[in-house]
Image 1 (cartoon, rainbow, N blue to C red):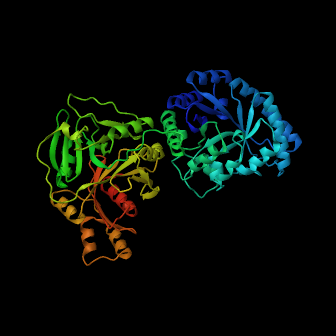
Image 2: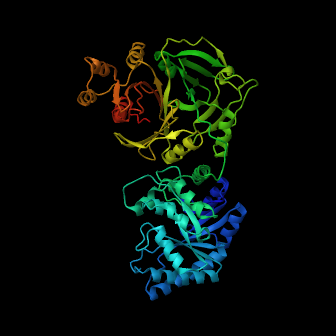
Image 3: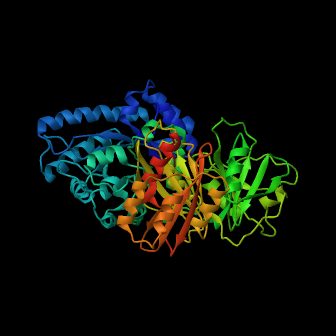
Length: 598
């Protein structure tokens, strides 16, 4: 099915927006009037630019406040419309969006609205234009799609149809099933947007918080199914008003937008990209650092051993149980530049996972391989983290371990160490994109977003995981666009006894993050503990949480560059990440070194 995007959904000049839409693979665009008015290009030049880029102009929008008006007002509105229709002829656009009126002059008179829309459609027909009438959720008298359709049906003009907008329909809680009663040929256009579920004025909600399908809380896929059953054959078009998108580069935003439509088409059965190959575990986490000594000291104190070294690159493998960390000193980095640069994901089908990633527009990473190096498939996440699809120890498939020479054999002390989860702090403008990427490309299930209080603002956090918890990734975003949290990440290591692990780490010289005594006073009020248990937690800086399924104990190392480690113990099926303790942890990290973490 053809795809389109409204120019208002992207930032920059009109030419930048058109170029971004074309490069992302869209078939067409909606030209938003303000973008055209601000452009130095003539309508003919815009038309030619779109043709050169392989884009059709699917819609010109919007024309406002034109129906159910006193005759004198309507005459002025028709004059305005005539100019727009002549402009559309020059532009090469044949469909115009007309929004339901919010004018204080508009009358609550459906018969008058139908009669005037019919006259408008007659004028449009003379110019080769169709009128798509849309109910704004905040329309003065017409605010629902079914009401708008009744007026269109009553007007009964071949050049008048309806435009359906998922935000206007779903934000009001309207039942989209009634869409199936509208003849498909009378649905002139379909605009799609998702949004987080917020309790706020619908106009402000619409103007600032829309997002691409799959990034919010609306059942956009369900609405599209109803539209398809009605017989709609036009494009799937995105119309998203979003403050973040208005400040982000148009190119990446357009790719994110198109990925959302590819995923939506798969969901509703319009497309069949390669099937998801959800990861089954974390093969490794790779740290890039200018100086291996500090992070190696932390890993050694945690009980990791340097078990292997890459045959051709300055990369060491540190391992404890099934938890593996690569320490890479290859690329030049700034002094505090220790960062989590790559993740190895165990995949049931590495080649299939890469094919799906590429089909959903994830950039495939070129790799310089020496002869004999494992041919690993890898893509880049929106934040730049490299994701490798691995098949560790599986015969017949490339094994990343084959690129390493053993230094010592891994030591197994019977402790079930593994990577419990990774926390990746996203650039401020890519949080929603990252959530969609990890769901659509990797097949991880997103959980609800959580706001976490930081001493200097709010951190937003959202976890994505496999159903069995074998892979858990927490995506966070800092409190402000200029906040230097885009490099803050951490690795959580699962152990069967976090108290014993914390003691061993401290005895080996590793400093644990100190937690204020006030936290433990509050903990004593919230939960009951065995004699001496809370004193142990207080001594070691262990935090505690409990949900309906079990308990969670965790503590933190100091940071190395922009990375820190967390020791965690899940008991009884605990499903969370200790979010209730995050404000205390963040404050403690600020106190230690003025650090804002993820």
